[in-house]
Figure 1 (cartoon, one colour):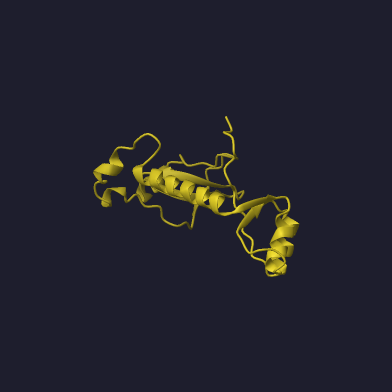
Figure 2 (cartoon, rainbow, N blue to C red; figure 1 turned 90 degrees about the horizontal axis):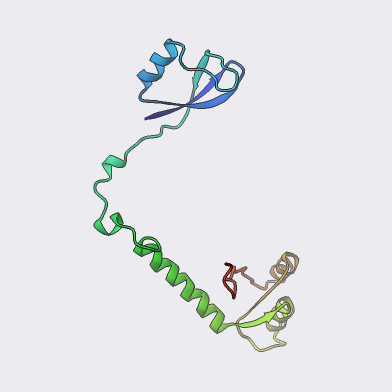
Length: 149
């Protein structure tokens, strides 16, 4: 399959799919290639990066990957599990200071409060101000405490 970028005289750009370059030339010569916007049959081929179908060169897929299991591929399930474990460790090893996050991060940074891992909420402005003060913060999307459905 050959995918070509094409254009008509009115500068409408579109794609055409052909079996080969010879297929395109033959169809164009018979007036079968036309602009889908205005119907013009004077169409020119534009430069484009080649799209090659090379899947047949990869060889057979491993047996494990050939049969997906419920919940996705085994490797994908392992990655999901590892991510959930990392989130759980983060929750277990940090203190939730809620909306006092920016204030508490400053207190820890300036030695006014004991050093410890904290998490909580901060606005974009608060996070930017903390970064400007040299206080490293990292936004983390945490899963909801209750299921969404």
